[in-house]
Image 1 (tube, rainbow, N blue to C red):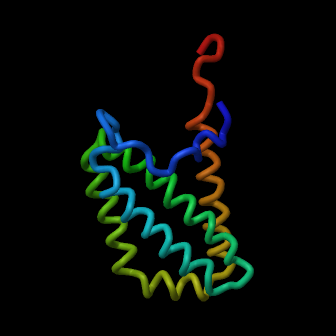
Image 2: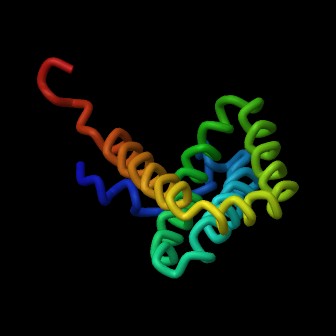
Length: 133
């Protein structure tokens, strides 16, 4: 299976017995906006880092989707996701100050997030029916 298959649908179907059906968008949306806000405040103050904002948007879409699906199976994770998104909203000023004054940290966190996104994409699309596995 291709790694690009991971990026096929940022919003999976919520019909039938889909794991995204509950809590689905109730977790996905707050996480997406949390990633978006953090990425914006880390990358936008530095013109050279602005293209890295795309990494934060993709992470919000796809990692948010994955976490929303896991929340179907572990309801406590829903509360943790909401708490994390709420913490970002409460601490926006501190995040903005940190992002504006720490160019290297903002760049490194963006690169680490890109590596995490690629790792999850590779892990999520690995071929599990190879011989002997």
